[in-house]
Image (cartoon, rainbow, N blue to C red):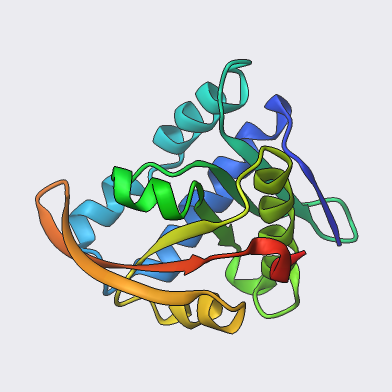
Length: 176
């Protein structure tokens, strides 16, 4: 396994992992029509091309490759996007982390979170949060990494009302 910063050439593989992970992770959690729209590989490709080709982006993106060099997961991070109260306490945010279902449970997720924490710390952000769908069974991953539950809230995704949970790390050095 190798964790490295993402390159613009990784956009297509990241989009493929993103779409596949949404389909396996969120089936039965997100309504089918919303899931189909949101896990469209072409939509994800445009998103990742835009992020990875923007030299001014504050977003950091890391990829996980298996021993054969195939991209099996990714994580992204940057300044907290939620309100000022969160930003004051948790200036950094783990925006996304996805692994192919076949790659889960082998340590790549932990390694990606470690890379994110290192990137944020290098930018002076030593605390971070993450938002995860409240019904996502993988949310306990964040608690296992030392994140403490902060709160839940409702939000709209297209025409569906969903709930999300926030987990926070007051000091990300525990992840490094």
